[in-house]
Image (tube, rainbow, N blue to C red; front, side, top):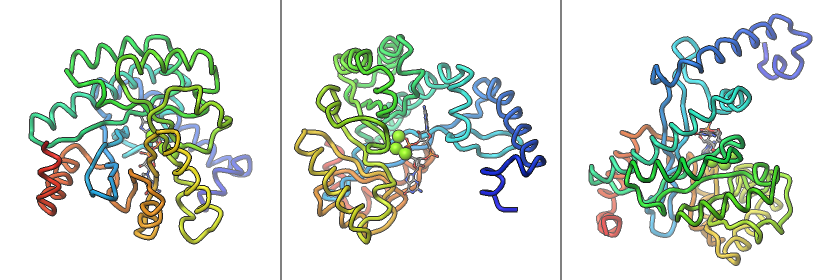
Length: 290
Ligand code: C2E
Ligand code: MG
Ligand code: MG
Ligand code: MG
């Protein structure tokens, strides 16, 4: 049977719906135990400067190894943890793990300048985020500027006034702020001026059509130019081909992330990736070490 048919017309496939309900139940129960059973892992996807080929940052992406379901995508389980409130504990774990990993790489002589961590709406508007970030930075000893927090337009627009306050608090700590999936949310450009931001991540949906589709290319080019003029770092997400890489680089996009360079990698594999890139380009390696 087609997966799409099962998803979109589940009323016609009672069997499938039961499967889905069963799977959901499995996930909800499993999620309660997943932290203590250490079933979560963070993978890290490099963000690469196409002019220097250096890894300037990595994005931490959570993975769940369920004993029966196998690898479960965050797109499937994060929304469940948002609903049942478990995202709080999981989100704290992600922050702590990502920051300690950066320090562990430091100790290992593998320099990763910055880690980006995705926040969920409930984590963001929870009121204790700043305190948690302070605690994690103190406990891990990570310099605040090496942590970037990714928020979405939707999260900010739920409560723009409160969001400005939270972002100001975080900025005061020295933490960086990125807008994830830029261009896909409901918001106006005026908020780019209102919110204190450091980076803007062009959503993959705009990168897919580059460079063949002229509309996508025009949007990507314009967003890069706008971001640069506003003094923001612009990251293109979902770069899969050398043509996309070349086009975005020609637009002046200084950070690219996507399968073309690397999929999200385990901590060990990210370490190898960095060491390989240093070996391939010793001059850049020396720059990285500075
Ligand atoms: P996101 O933050 O927009 O992350 C980018 C997603 O695109 C990741 O999917 C990544 O694996 C995928 N990706 C990267 N490059 C390419 C590419 O070239 N082609 C394609 N097709 N995909 C690419 P992933 O890891 O499945 O994560 C999905 C979403 O789950 C993330 O979207 C983020 O919203 C959420 N998420 C992941 N980890 C966390 C977390 O620790 N906390 C929270 N709250 N959300 C998370
Ligand atoms: Mg993200
Ligand atoms: Mg994204
Ligand atoms: Mg996305």
